[in-house]
Image (tube, rainbow, N blue to C red; front, side, top):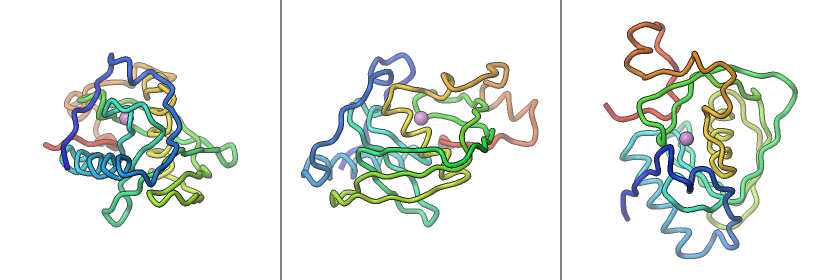
Length: 175
Ligand code: NI
């Protein structure tokens, strides 16, 4: 078990197209997920993608509503319908900043779990947003690249001072 170093904006690994995971059941994949969960618990976020810890593989983890973590290998995401939602997002690779991003409100997803089994489902609201954000990391896309209004990008402290109510925090840093 280990707490891993997070790649920050400017590191080329964050701009790469990640490789498919051949065998999610491999021992090194199990260890990677364990370390990613430990890292996310330590830093206090909602999701973490493998490129963010300098591993260019198609894998991300998300915190679940009940406080556990779901790992998804080789994930695929499709929007459902044509409804979009706006919300504030942050990213552990862009510490201290938040920005407003418009994304599809509902998605269908599929991917492999740690046992290699293909699972699929639908998500809406914050869960859909987190999965889309993490999936973007696998394709070299960071949330500012999705923003249409860069005047709504700012430091958390300043946004909190001048923009009450408080922004919804996507990947919150520990205080
Ligand atoms: Ni991120």
